[in-house]
Image: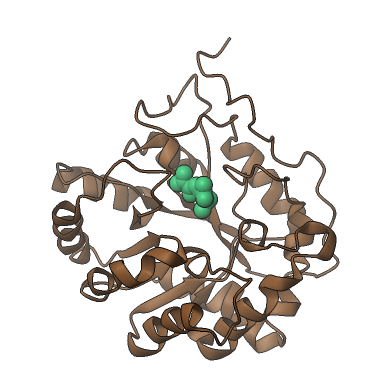
Length: 297
Ligand code: 0GY
């Protein structure tokens, strides 16, 4: 038996998602998903804030094929800390169909960075969500940013909307392409043209090195799945229509830390034509942009 037992309130990912009605274009990339464990082989980090259930690379490939995606970008989640072995194992087994975003510490060596690059890592993730990390070592993050720049990597940042004013100057000083997870988690009870989302849109408009994932309606929505997460649509659509060449989309499988419900991945795919309402927007969001960022070589 594994020494890791998922948290008692951990929701297992959907075992039988619906087949999407929306047919994904050939070459579509699921640009935000994770692999967890198996804990027996790839232990979870001692400093983790949650213990998930296992979600293996083979289960991810099965979902990719079932939904109709061609490729994946696997993002390191905090439960694995800066131990990227599960991620690298998945990338190495992917036959070139997956690229990765790692988490590293300042002590990472050049040789380790090069090995991550060879495996298919093309970015690092800086997590600013307070419930997920202990401290924010800004000096360290700045140093890491300067080192990974030389590899041509980008930085993925994860934060919640109320933190943006405080983090704004740190973000805009970053020297690489910067990808924001889930539109900076807007408060969708506020208007799309309200002050909070305006700050996010300003960040995107005034800094052409900033990209955004328009993913995770299930985390952001107040309306919830029964109403098709419809309150998130105007936010995601605004970002896609304003910055069509700098947006990405992903399932977020296996949906860590979802406490209210577990989304049906097929239904998430079916939201795509609502947030990217033309074939051109869809092609950019699902193929051109992720390919440019992750498969440039
Ligand atoms: C996500 C969401 C979460 C967790 C992580 O790294 C993580 O632990 O990403 C979350 O709890 O919001 O983006 O998948």
